[in-house]
Structures are given as structure tokens and as C-alpha cells.
Length: 502
Image 1 (cartoon, one colour):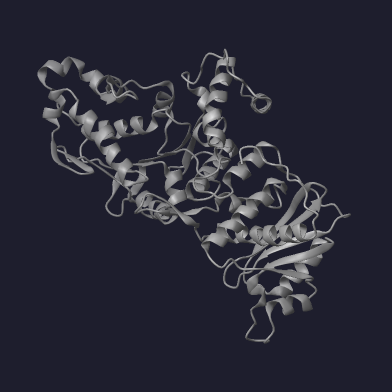
Image 2: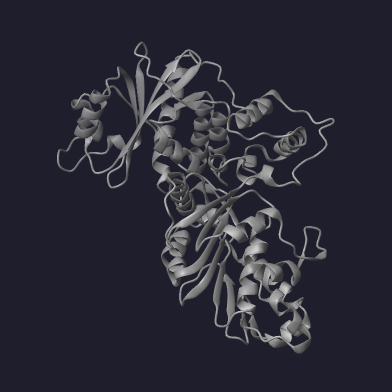
């Protein structure tokens, strides 16, 4: 222990050398009601303390206090050890300021004066505190230089979703600033099935499932479900539990998760308010955490509702009905093709392809290999563009290779028309069944297609973010606009199966 105790505390030296004792006896925090209380580890925090690894990844439900616990652990380590450099990364500036003030500065200033007199704060400026023993803690939204012994990345899922480049920088910069044998804590709720946090989580889960021995460079996976929190219960009297919720609880029981009536009541009541966000904010099992729609996602609620209704599943090809294709044409970008059938009231999306660097000859052969009987092929306006080498339009080239008939879908003239087409795509998807395996990459694109985030305004722009998810989203939009216009023109429109929560 790097702190020298005064004479009257010498008798407690053994206790002070026990970090668990210090965490449970020395620090004060503000609780959810703003009251100053003594910090005492709850069951989840204690479990993490006793079992954490050099690199620990925590996927969690809300309000379990992991940010508070990890940052108190960092504060305690820096106070009672010399020359420890610690960093804390939050997903935005406001959260970074709040963490510094509430999780670091407040507990330090409320320590017993005897301890503060022995380990003083020699520097205390915005976002950083330096102690007289040479240890320091810096809180911000990134970490670009220096070395660290402890790093905490809070809400990495949100960082990866809104600021993907920053997430990469954290992985290549901040993570690399922590030497082998030191500690990294990454904790977050989930935010979509793509991005750095999702990839990191999937690797950690796969490692855990394989039962492999962890090295000092492997993340250990921790998951803390909502039903592990003893406070998430309420009196079931008067609480309506729908048939859909009963089905959900039955599914949980099949997974070995048994809920009591008070837990079911709490979940049902919270679901009334949060809807599909419940899966992200209060997941029951790890995979569920990534099923909820991400913030600003155009098709997020619909995709989550389709999953909840079991409509993202195995969807077979029916040889008695034609297969229509819907394209997004890429030159340097990706080329995407959706394959779907209209059977009675159902729209069955049976297949998806995405690739780049190939011409129409490659895709003509691919269509043949699929073995489907085709109807129309819906392509965007740029299929009319002439190729420099042949002087022919891309449509003429495609049709000469057997990809026909091609229906050209008009380009939106402005952002308002684009948003109208996105609305048409929403209606298209509400009556869809989608093959989960064959369309996996396309599904991820639809789930992640979202509004662009404006960091200066702190909100979403009323326009799409152009990234990898745009290709599959633009592809399905081509079919939604083109196919629906044909149905309406032919007056054969079928009543859609409206998706709940849409």
C-alpha cells in the first residue's frame, strides 16, 4: 500500500491494505435521489470485483452501477498506489464532465480528511486530477497519447454507433496505451449488431463459449441481466400481461430463465414505456441485447418487431412464384441484390447478395446459379448511365447478358423525396418475412441504416448517414418503390400485415 497512515490509524492498517474493505468503507457517492450515501458494493459489483480480468468487457442492463464502481476502483487504486496513470473515456463531453465531477472528484473530496491530507490533489483542472503520490486520473472523450495502467471506456456501444471513427481510434490508440498485464474495463449497453463494441463482444463471447484459457490480451466477457437485479420487481396486482409478453416469458423459460410474477409485472410495465428499447436497456440474455433498434435507425422499430413476431426466420423459395430482384448499383462501392417473392398477402425476402469489383457478367452468372425463376429486376436510375468502354448503357449491357426485364426506378430529386421513399420502404417491410441466414448481412444493413448525427447540435439530422449500411438499404428501397408502384398501377395492392409497434 503506497500511503503512510497516521499513528491513530495504524491499528487499522490491515483493513486499509484490503481494497475491498476500502471500497466498502471509505467512499461516499450521490444515490439516484441525489442523497449523499456511503458506497457499498452490490452483488453485481462485488462479483465483477472478485472475478474481473486484465481486460474485462461488461455487457449490462441499466442502473446496475458499474460506471460508479469501476471509477471508484480507479480512484482507490490511484490514491493508495504511487505513479498510477488512469484514463476514463465517456461517449460525449457532457458525460465526461459528469463522470469527473460525480465519480472522481466528489468521492475524493468526501474522503476522510486524514486520507486527503496524506494524498493531496496537486493539480485539479477540468477533466484531470493529479495526486501528490504521482498518480493521476484523466477523464475525456478520447485518449491519444501517453501510457496507462488502468483504462475505463464507458458506453463503448454508443461511441461505436454514433462515432465509429472515434471507436476505431480508441481500439488502436487508447487500448494500445495500456501495457500487457494492466487493466482495461469496457462496459456498455448494446447498440446495434455492428461496430467495434459488437465485434469485441462477439469475440469475447466466442472465447468464453469455447472454454479457452484467457491470455492477458483476451477480453473476459461479463453479462449482467435485468432479472439479476433484486430491485426489478413490483406488485403484479392490476398489471396487464399481454399474450405476446406471456409468449416472451415462455421463450425465456425455454432458455432456462425463470421469472417470478413480480419480475414479470415489472418487465411488462417497463415494456409499456420502452417498447423494443427494453431489449437494449434491460436485456434478459446476451444475444437479446443487440436485437433492439439503434438510435436514429430508419427501419429499427420495424426490424425489431419482425424479430419479436418470429418473421425473421427460415423463409424457403417457392418455385411456383417468380422471384423479383432489387438492386443498388456500385462501381467502387458495393453492389447489392435483394431477392423476394410476393405470395398471397406475404412478401417473402428469401436471399441477399453483396459484393464489389465485378461487372454485370458476374451477376448474370450468379442469378443463373441461384436457380430461381425471375420476374422483374428493379434497378436504380443510374442503370441508364453509359459505360465509356462500350458506349452502351448499363441497362443494355445487363439485358444483353440475360438480366431482364429491368424496371428502372426514378432517383429522388431532393431529400424530401428520399424521405418519402424511405417511408415507402417502411410500408414494404411491414408485410415482410425475411430469411435470417441468407439475408444476414442485408438485415444488419437495414438495422444500422440511420440518420446522420450532428455532434454540434447534439441531435440527428433529417437525412441519412452514408456508410456501409446504405448499400443494402438503398437496394431494398429500389424494390420497395419500384415493386409497390407496379402493384398500385395494376390495382392489385394487398392489405399489409401491419407490424406492431411500427
